Image (cartoon, rainbow, N blue to C red; front, side, top):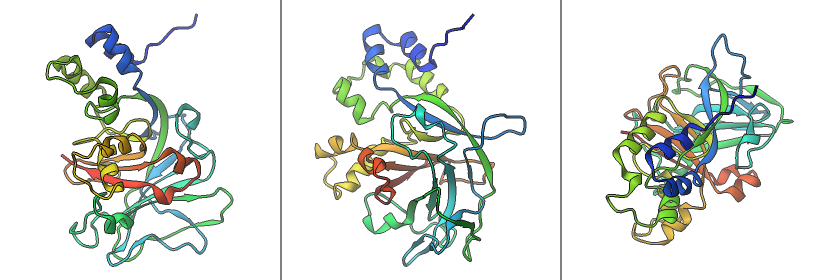
Length: 284
């Protein structure tokens, strides 16, 4: 007999929200991939890794932030191994995605990468390496300590939008203080559901502070006043590419237990224009 399963977020919504609001909120959910540490006893394929040494194309230069120094290698993902059919974004079906970030090792964290400062954008990079490109492992540049290598597996999951996400505002307009989405039981259930280390590919971002889509949109528009209505519309054009959480196994600590976020417009993703991805980070 086939046993039916109910998505935990669907069940959570129907438990804590009125039926009509629950269905509307469920309509905002998106599929994502949770990236988890591979276990010795696991049978899931290895889809990538945190840390270690990157495999870069022959002749390619190590990513550098001019005037500051080389970036640290954060993670790589083997697109051919990812169950990307589960996603609603056009992840390449082959090749490798490599993520780099200026993590403060060279300057004790004095230079920060931020979407509202275009001069800092070179401090975070996504490289797409085609499957047929000859590659070789690179040692890290002087002054950069490689992170411990942590192999990753992936599993499909449903992801929820942050309650202040522009998509929620678009669906429900302004939320009064007594709106069911602010209900204590619902918010606590959402918090419990998203507990633990969260590395993600696709889906909704899980922000530490505020909607990362709005941060990126604000920077992409040239930092207009936050009251500018264009920010919300622009934020709806950006989707999460990858989220790399604080991870003790990989010795990664982003501020005070924060996370790194790379976002991209779907049209740029479809054209593999990863040079147009935007970066932000948040911590507690």
